[in-house]
Length: 169
Ligand code: FEO
Image 1 (cartoon, rainbow, N blue to C red):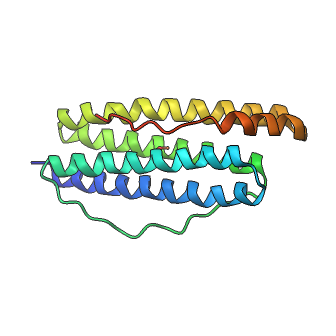
Image 2: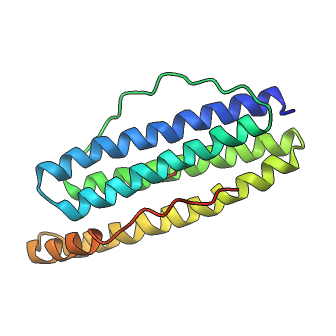
């Protein structure tokens, strides 16, 4: 049976992963409006990944005999109105998610739940990848600047991104 404090922390993180899904869905609207279909695809994959992250925790909490409690998902707030600021927000958001995953791992540690810590290792590694991917994309966007041709080339590249159902845990 899972400790109550850890159970609450897992429920909170399920909500945050669902919020991430919602935020990326909101960001996708901007790229649809710009008719940048490769970016739209990139956000589509991002949305599916966040859903998988939430469901991974949902299933794990259930497997551990915890009670799943779904709270309201906050309204997503897309701060910027240009590509660069949107991706700056993506990186900022992923860094925030990393801090929340680390907090969850701290609670698992505190409650001496080695199984949960082992499970969370997947998320810790995933966050390293998420931050590196977004950081790389952001660097490319900075390089591109106002070059529309280069932006369209990147858009083509992003159209090739595909979602792979992760094996979590
Ligand atoms: Fe679920 Fe993008 O971290």
